[in-house]
Amino acid sequence: MGRLFGTDGVRGVANADLTAEMALGLSVAAAHVLGEAGSFEGHRPVAVVGRDPRASGEFLEAAVVAGLASAGVDVLRVGVLPTPAVAHLTGSLGADLGVMLSASHNPMPDNGIKFFARGGHKLPDDIEDRIEAVYHEHESGEPWQRPTGAGVGRVRDHGEGLDTYVAHLIGVLPHRLDGLKVVIDGAHGAAARVSPEAFARAGAEVVTIGAEPDGLNINDDCGSTHLAGLRAAVVEHGADLGVAHDGDADRCLAVDADGNEVDGDQILAVLALGMREAGALRGDTVVATVMSNLGFKLAMEREGVRLVQTAVGDRYVLEELKRGGFSLGGEQSGHVIALDHATTGDGTLTGLLLASRVAATGKTLAELAAVMERLPQVLINVPDVDKSRVATSAELATAVLAAERELGETGRVLLRPSGTEPLVRVMVEAADIEQARAVAGRLADAVKTALG
Image (cartoon, rainbow, N blue to C red; front, side, top):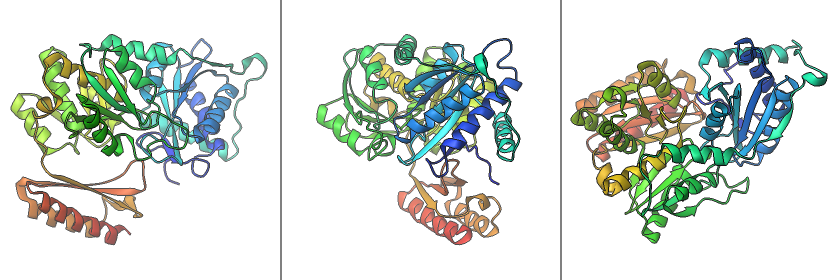
């Protein structure tokens, strides 16, 4: 049996892979495991539960709330809010755990469940493994210990969550946004209300797109995975910049005034230099993954900023930030973690910090992003293959070695199984875009042949 927890919680097609029964069982198991770990010592446990606007989130939220309450946990239901808002509220409200229902950038039929520990921190692998083990024990007949009477959990709505979270964001902003016009693409997702509200309170003139979630249109040709609409809107409205979120708003990508994309590497570079200038970049170090563009690495070297690289996944970036005592890290995909202000990637905070840097310097976003030159990078997703054999296929290893020899020192190759989707990602960088495309195409064919 494969592991239920991936790189970002348990995720799958709602009501097929991720059922109400599974959501309920995982929630009860989480309550039991976190209780055993000491999170509930001496007091009645409390959980914060939030979700994105997907239609399936309605029944999954009901299942999670039922599971937690049946395990003796009081539930604060915060409704539709971004993942980082649920993490923040878990910490600020002194809750013992948080639960977020979202499949992030995945299409609408998918959904997911992820847990936060006390303080709003993601769970380490060993705790997730224990939750999964307890869940499977119950599936095989081990009965839950169930409270009765006054011991069952109570459920109430917590409507102040949005205001609490936005106030936090405004409170940590180093410079107001007065005079800036910003277009925000909320991906018809969890940030559709929060992000425009935060930018407006910070002083920006806000134009919104992707801000009318109906439960079915999340990530539908909008948001951080589809930037065409944002590019057009920024140019049409003469805005200074645009920011795009994914479904649960833990990431942010941007476009400059001319509609050119500013990716997570460039955002990270801009923020790193701004934080170093302010004395807030601890150790003069930034943490990024092996997927970061080679141009980012070269820019940081030139600017005297140390780069520490991790495996792909914001959880690994977060682990390294904590281990090394650093303050800033992120991914090319737009997950940026400003650890002094957030416990996880926060797309609204990232967008605010980026816009704040534009306002503080008086420079355009294009001028700031020019600190790094993106080398040509081609990414191909290869679906319907056995992603578990990426590291063990001799045939695939031979193909990768041949590609690396062809590229030499002017490029690189990276193959990795997706942590959230049934596919393998093929990434090739080269000094020449045509060479990168050709090599990536051959490697994608090799993946289909070797793993199909």
